[in-house]
Image (cartoon, rainbow, N blue to C red; front, side, top):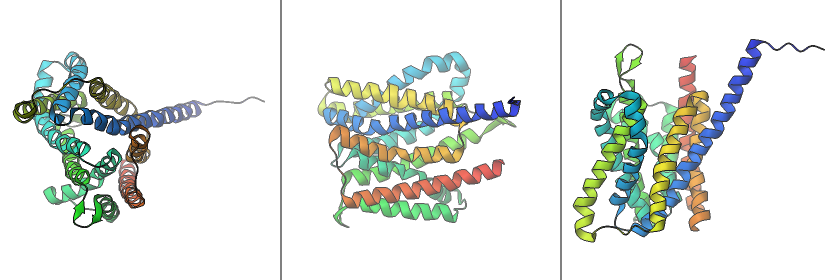
Length: 322
C-alpha cells in the first residue's frame, strides 16, 4: 500500500508542529513572569526601602542586554527616532512598577499582587472608553464586572473599610499597566507609509528600558539615598535583580516575540491567563504563602473575567482577519 504525502499535508503538519512548539514556548514565557513575583518580593524584603534602586538595577541590566543588538541591527538614527515614544511608554512603566513593587514590599502575598495585576487586561477597554469614547462590547463589560468582583474579594480583609495595602497598590499599578498597553498599541499602529509601521518593537523596547532605568535611578537618588544611604548588595538581592533582568525581561520577551506569531490569538490569550495562578503556586512553594477561601474565590473570578474578555476579543480579531 502506497501512501501519498502531498505538499499541503506536509505544510499542515509543519504548521501544527510550529503551533505546538509556540504554545510550549509561550507557556515558558508565562512561567518566567509568574515566578518573578515571589523572587522580586524576596529580593525587596532584603532591600526594604530601596525599591527604586532595585528597579534601576533591573532595567539597566535589561537595557545593556538588548542595546548592543538594537544599535547594531537598527542603527543610531532609528534608535533616536524611537526616543519620544519610548519616553512616554517608559514613564507609564515607571508609574506601574513604582506601585507594583511597593505592593510587593507591603503586607500581603505576591500571588495576590499577580492576580490583581492581571486585572489590567480588562481595564484596557475601560480606559479606552474614558479617553477615546470607544465602544465597549457586552462580553468585555461582563468580563470587567466579573474580574472587579474578584478584585473586591481579594482586597477586602475584615470589612469594607479594611483593605490590604498590597492589593490597593496593585489596583493602581494595574491601571498603569493598562495605560502602558494602550500607549504601546497606539504607537505600534502608526505607519510611516501604508503597511510599514513607524516604530519597531526592539528599538521601542530598548528606549523604554532606558527611560525606566533613568527615571528610577533619579527617583532612587532623590528619595531613597538621602534617607537611607545606599543599599547593601546581598546575594539574594543580586540574584533577584539578575533573574528579573535576564529571565523575566530578556528571555521572556525574546520567547514572546519569537513564538507568539506562530500561535492563534485565542490560544495565546488563554495561555497568558495562566500567569497569576502560576504566580500563586510559586509563591506557595518558595515563600510559604497561602490563600484564604475568600481570596481563592476572588482569584477564580479574576481569572474567569480576564480569560473570557481575552478569549472573545481574540476570536473577534480572528473573524475580522478571516
